[in-house]
Length: 323
Ligand code: UDP
Ligand code: MG
Image (cartoon, rainbow, N blue to C red; front, top):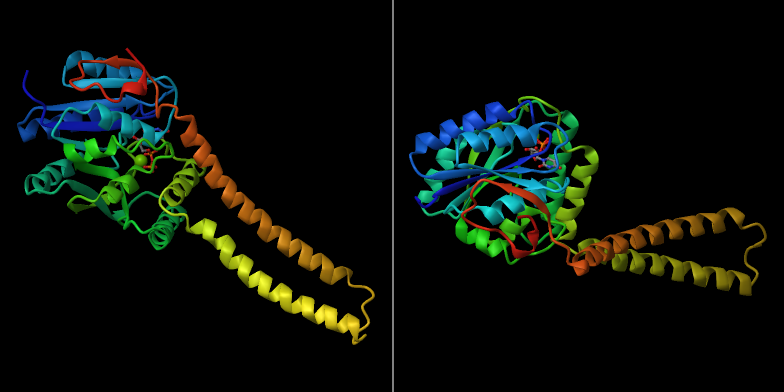
């Protein structure tokens, strides 16, 4: 069998409307490159006909393969599973909804041939996304870079090409709350970008509701920075200084009967509410980190595969079940 040069990793969650078009576009682009390739779809617990549609692709073409998850594990575990099973020298992660243009794969591979290990697609503009999503995304990336020591490129999603060496290095990063693009930045290697305009989704709705976006956002910050924990020290010091000054004032005032201190309900209430608020926020932040430690300590697999369809030249992680 010919050795596989390129692996495409395509996470799928309820994408039945777009899959036939996506598959055709991906096949066209990959065939035109003239080298052996494979397309690995990961069915992330879809509740529509995505799974059976992909099975028909696999039957028609042995280069197309499917990893079926036992339930919905999420986008980041899905692309991790795909990368784990990819046999190619270069691995390309691309969304199923055609928001990432497959035609960019050619230029990405060109950069890879020039010697770059990571080539990410940088969004020059986003079409068809709400004002809210665009603004929050920009603000978020700015904040992330301020908080972390790892430079994480702005306006870059998971659409990228990585060399097989980068994937092998990723296998040594078993963390659960994965923020794959951050992990790749952390690894280093030689990186470059190709620019594109992010098209609107071809069909269907976004599978990233605000809840999942917020979780991914928190994952990004907490897995690369513990600065939020240090917030407690700063706040604590400032508040302690004010408290101490106020304490002296109260003490002296009481001692020499400078002011009459009868009512005091309002001021007491303000102080108590304020300090409890700050304390609870800090407890929440600490809880967030402890929860993540808990998650890691349990050491469960990142995803569970219920079925593999097609011949996989690489078997992925040992702990992933399936077969
Ligand atoms: N996706 C997935 N599991 C999920 C959510 C999304 O595999 O739990 C896939 C989805 O099918 C798509 C990609 O991840 O191929 C990106 O999702 P989406 O297009 O909904 O995100 P957006 O582009 O709106 O950020
Ligand atoms: Mg999308």
